[in-house]
Length: 289
Image (tube, rainbow, N blue to C red; front, side, top):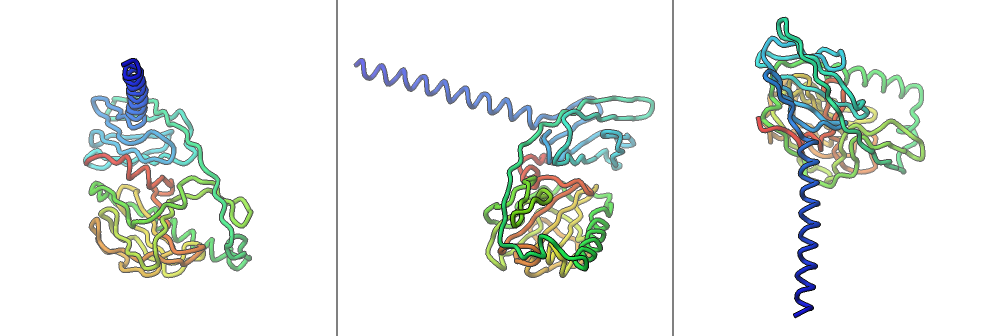
């Protein structure tokens, strides 16, 4: 009997601990994914580095995030891209007519992993002068198509994973390539077998396709509207053309091993214009439109 009582007491203690952990988790989660409300402003998403915030306000409003003007469409929609190293304290200013409202937006910092990759061709880590010229030219072209503005909200179809596979490269990780420190990784690497089908994760218009780039190999840029674009790199085969209108789930490309790679995988990048955000955070924290 005494043994039974001891077991019951132990179970009660375990239950209390589990309850406490769940309480802390859900409260922290609620804070992390909180909504900011006022009579004329609503912001949804994760208030953390590398995330995207979806905003809604009254049409004809003006939004400034840390003095940078943010486009607001005729329905009052706007997007905020939170960079990898965004500072903790930020200021959002909303102007509508003669009314001005100010909001302090606190962003939670993240700790990023260090990822070491060896076995890359030497020139893919330290390009020669001719290759550097090519890289510079391609970077300008990529930036051009990432910054094409589309006054549509195609992203409201929601996002799904473009391919199934194991994540081997996380957003924000500090890269050490062949023993040499390089820029952080601004995307998510998904390993899949050569030729695996890649789908459009959301409604989009094909901004541009590249048959051969130095680092990214075959790649595609999709435009989802209001500055939100996505990139698909190291492809084996491309099934779309510039200007194509896509629905979520449409066939996009095949997983390949072109460009700077050690094996077949998809590099999936997402950005608001040139502010790279974390695809995993987008999948996890997108609102229900």
